[in-house]
Image (cartoon, rainbow, N blue to C red; front, side, top):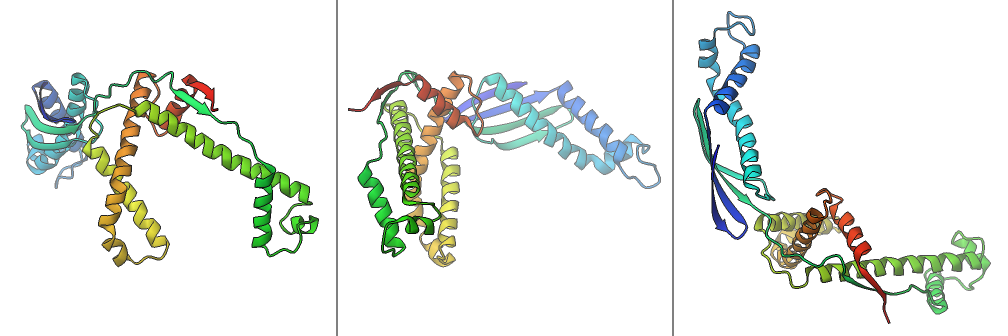
Amino acid sequence: MKTEIKKIGSNQRELNIEVSGEIVKNKFSDVFQRVSKEAKVHGFRPGHAPADIIEKQYSSIIHQEVLKELVPDVYNKAIDAEGLDVIELPEITEVKLTKENLSFKAKVEISPEIPIKDYKNLKVNFRLINVASDEIKRAIDSLKEQHKANELDDRFARSLGYPNMQELERIVERQIFINKENQERARIENEIIEGLTNGLDFKVPQGLLKRQVDDMLRQAKMDLALRGISKEVIEAEEKTLLEKITPKAREQVRVYLVLSEVAKKENIPLNDDMPRFVMEFLLREAEWKEAS
């Protein structure tokens, strides 16, 4: 197999791939045998038609099947051999196939080089979570107002499904605590991300960015539709939506690529759970300090 690589952009490469000889011949032979066993030829039982008739009637099918099986196989071997970290499906062009030779071009987008270094000792400033009595009081007063109650007593608590005011206050305190805990966790994760990505300069691959923008735009349109906004209004607002979505999508892709780089260095599987596992790793390895 012969592979030539041409750089056509910071994150794009064009591969000229060619393979010949036994690999191509064997694939044709393999496909021909499979087609011969199933081919329906008038006057012959399946699997018993002469080879020249099979070749004449099914040559196009055989040709297409060889391409379908051989191109992905040869492409993947070329990518592995060249050590390219491809992040998008290739654009295959100029495919040429004979009984002894296959050649094609593959335009691919590769992961950018991300010069990540000190990611094991990121600074985390944590805050102890407390719930003040006045916070509980404000929350319960809000409940009283919403339910137009006259008194804050056990009868009011029971109307909300709790045996008494003491239990209601305990539940309200717990809910406030959980909300604060979630907010603090989000703040800490943002602090980790900021420390991880600060100063890193690399170009976001356009293919990944487009996919993320498309997904976010689709979701935004769906959300508007569920709110009763007409299709015409949504379409008219698409440009405005794109202007809002694109910067967010770019940052999300940027963060994902940086997390992926940590995952590669720490042998964390690159699957759907990768961001969570990497964040857990970064939090374990971080330097924690209570905020003053």
